[in-house]
Image (cartoon, rainbow, N blue to C red; front, side, top):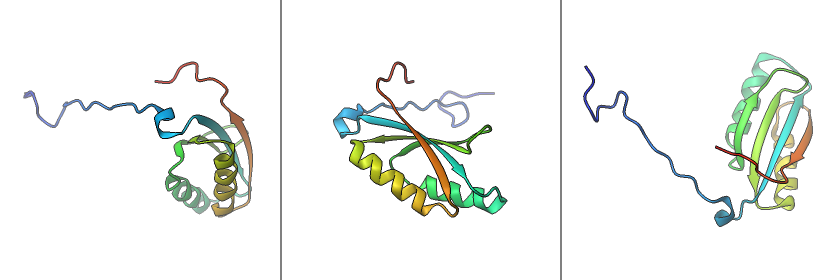
Length: 108
């Protein structure tokens, strides 16, 4: 039997913050391809990307690259530093392709 307010089934709301209020108006998607596919490399890359505060989302994907990263930044200078730092910290050499968002048509 379900009781109102019980932890099971209770809903939690979330609030969206206007990115421009935080000075984070630039959205970039980055494809990352690793040079090695060993199992421990996946774990090391995951750990590095989890600790990058500008990274909003990171997905391990199938296809021609390994990771799709979404980052929200204050401008191109921050993006340049973020990309350099991310690639330097990865445990293997990596190749990247970036896509700068010109307009957010829909984001939920």
